[in-house]
Length: 73
Image 1 (cartoon, rainbow, N blue to C red):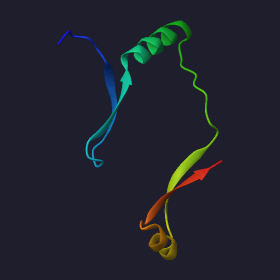
Image 2 (cartoon, rainbow, N blue to C red; image 1 turned 30 degrees about the horizontal axis):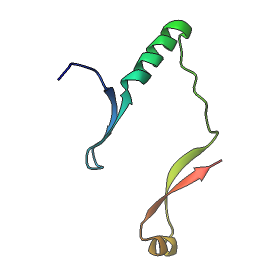
Image 3 (cartoon, rainbow, N blue to C red; image 1 turned 30 degrees about the vertical axis):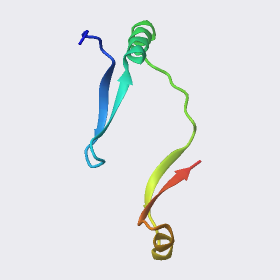
Image 4 (cartoon, rainbow, N blue to C red; image 1 turned 120 degrees about the vertical axis):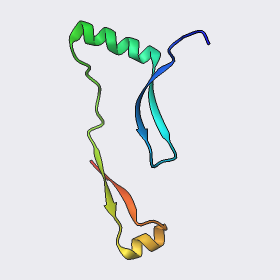
């Protein structure tokens, strides 16, 4: 009602009941300031990755699902 920006949509997962993700307005202000000052954003990383994998039949039966997330260090 007051015309204040509270966030900017960045991604939406349509198949997940319309779940969306947004960046809060204060973060956007920080990002813009850093981009103008340094030309890029540097964020820390955890040093890991993940991928989706199909479970073997016995694992799938035990877990009650056919796929899982495999975290790689």
